[in-house]
Image (cartoon, rainbow, N blue to C red; front, side):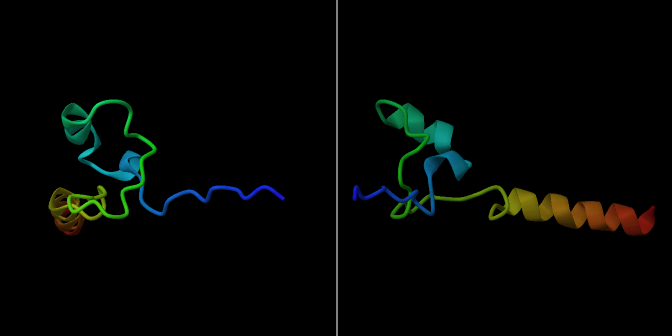
Amino acid sequence: MAKRKSKPLKTCADCIHEFACAMWNIGNIHNMDAANCTNYETVKDSAAYLIGLLDGRKEAQNG
């Protein structure tokens, strides 16, 4: 039986820095494994997401 490659848990496609990194790298990094990337950050992990979430809750309370 042929072994299937498993999909990496973290890919550059999920990272908010994908396009900035692509400018520094040659080629398509969309499906690259980002397991060892020190700058890997998803939208939900970012401070901007948290600030937007908290602002939304505050506005909903002040309605």
